[in-house]
Length: 179
Figure 1: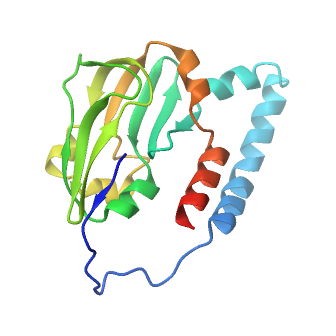
Figure 2 (figure 1 turned 180 degrees about the horizontal axis):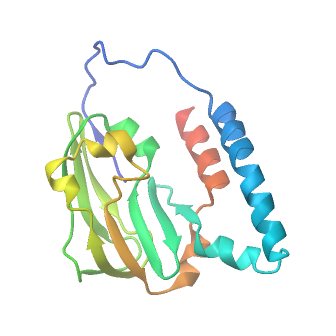
């Protein structure tokens, strides 16, 4: 996502507290550790690596994510991107059946302080769009990486996923951008 910022207006909605990303990471790892260990034991470890690829999330340096489930990628902008954009007021999405190459702009996001194109992290064909965002673009601010996904795309070339960032690499990328 490429940001085009205007000057923010200070106001009562300014963040007052900030949870450290390290602290959040520890909480998330602690919460998921028992489930991961149980899954590893159930599969004997053999199939675990294969299944991890099928249910993985990848990120671009431009703050798009791609959650992979089989041959389908669910694509949207990250929480980092929505926070940088501010209050989202409009989301423009493609049509089902549209085809995109990795890196092509497939839509745009407008907020009260910025407008930005959104780029496809992978090559493929759009199989579904999140129509709710047309009427409720602010949903992106509330749940960017869950309910407010933009498109679902049939993955044409799974090897492109190897060029995207893992959650740990993306976290490091965001920390560097924040400083």
